[in-house]
Image (cartoon, rainbow, N blue to C red; front, top):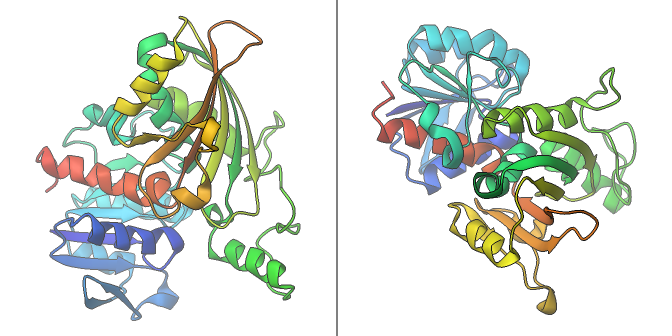
Length: 330
């Protein structure tokens, strides 16, 4: 199968190439796409070198699927052109997520909504993906009425420039800044730009995308998203209020049975999810499970995942795998 990766030289794009290879996705021909200045360069995949081409050239080569991770503006301009050529686009940017005509998909939760007519499919925000993976089985069983989430997001979510800033600051070396402020030995309570309501775009993505994926607009959600000096892996402190009461043993069982979720919850032995352990893995790790003793039917939990993998590349490739299995790819 011909596969295009748009944004193939970026952090998520290179992770996509790695995950395609690891999962043995049947790529017969890779079409790496990047900006004009990268055209002609080569990327390595499956033991071969593949020349980077322009988006226009990629369309002419008629891939069956195009994995996009090149930012919202690129997606808005080029995804429709790929789709018009009959190419299925799986887009990692925020451009199409809240479009009512586009599917926003986490395969373990709502892949059932996909049809052959869906030519632009949205990949959710990284922090949203890991949260809904843990909350989906609990929502089915108990019904979620409210979510309070605070995130601790690594610098890899911003990109290579942010990783370089963190490592330069750690070494005491001057360099280009991805953030307005120092990130090492600091936390930044801002991810993306601020909106009129005082929330950031990232915070509202978590609110709106969660409702869309879980197919429940009645869930009340409030979010605070924070950048922390961690290289890779996002963490979340989540408080959930349910419509019905629960037993912690049942919560653990439901989470353990959810595909793609791993429970790491043994406080007696100081076992809990950490981004250092999640980095490079596709699973979502859940721990610190405890009843919120301040109000009824409420649970606290801690959720960690690799934001470049399940939070981006792996989820997109899982969507492609589902489409292929169901015979929905050309």
